[in-house]
Image 1 (tube, rainbow, N blue to C red):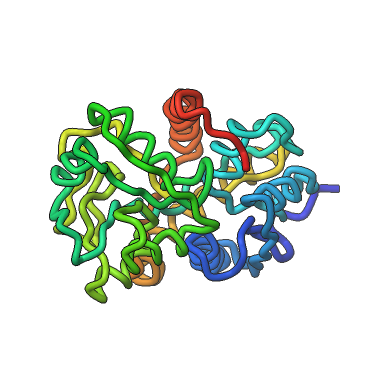
Image 2: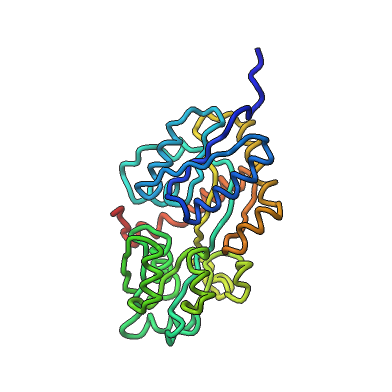
Length: 302
């Protein structure tokens, strides 16, 4: 007897963070778009904890039947495994399906700061007392940006001040406790538009639609300062490849709709469609690129 064609009942996207963050916003928008493409409900379930590892572990151990997917970010699949010797799942337990979207990281200072642009930030770092830089803890995206600034701009004194979350780090800059940070566009956009933060550069490879005047670090001559808060979909190992291809096609079609673009772009999130092969290549490149930074900065899981 032939199996019923996939999908014939609701699908679940598991998010490794609580509701309301960039990853959750992307997963919900894409789930709605994919549901229209596949004709089945796609339910988003939040399983926060351990920097998104709890959600990744849940999906890695789920049945590979095409009904449970992990809406993952860099932490659970790329960076945390570099910092931690005891991961509950292996990299190959989660199969990349496709990239969904990216919220570029934006390097920001307080609007009242005397630092007017990226060049002046680098100059201040080379003078005394240097630059204080807020991060969301060891191995977070802002931490990678700070270490890239040290490694790829000819040095400078960046004093890293870790906070518990990206929003706390941003608040530290808004309240003038710290000189600078780098955080997801979706997080800093309201503060930039509210006149509290000045954007100096975006650390992605193309300008963000919502902030067209903010140059990229690549344009400014620093292509190695490259990192974004991306969100992609993963399936448990053993999920049939035809299911993965069908899901990838549904994501790409959904991301190309005005409904999805008008939901993500105004919040500073860029849709990032691509094939499964594109996503696999992106992840391999990320690992190659970020591993030396983890090593040189001696990043440890806190």
